[in-house]
Amino acid sequence: MNVEIIGCRGNTGNREELIERIRHFGEESKTACQIMNAEMVYGREHVLSAVEHAVRAFKNGTNSCKTLDLEILLYASGKRQIKDAIDFMGIGKSEKFVFVCVGEGNPKGEEFLKKLGLEIDNSVIEGDISTLEKFGISKEEMKTVDKSMYGDLILEKVAMVDLIK
Image 1 (cartoon, rainbow, N blue to C red):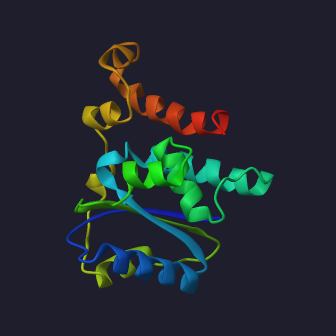
Image 2: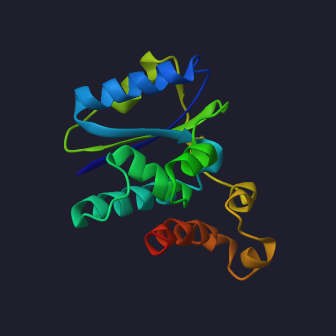
Image 3: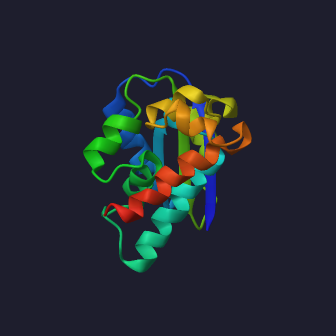
């Protein structure tokens, strides 16, 4: 299974139209595609972990959503309800995004994003302390680990989704 994780930025215009274009691109490329607010992502491992959990949920028949793209968003957000996940990590009014494609083919996500007028910028994927705080991770919790392990705190949130089903 191929996974593309691409950071990008720009003005997407009408959000509903963007989501429809992404859905159509996913159908054409036979991939599950998801776009999320980059300000809520703490590195590539965060997104990759969400993808792995979502794929495993589908393989095991424990998925909560009917589609892999929404299951990925649930895990990435650490939420159990799709409305909560969309409110928390959806694109909203952001102009920095993380685009994810998961499937057997080579969807060429960068080309698609450029056609949408977005600039590829993988630096938007890297999270910071404010990202951790948005996930409800306190400064006290952060003090319990070395800064190099902050990403593990987010990975715990992703893994917890399995426990709160």
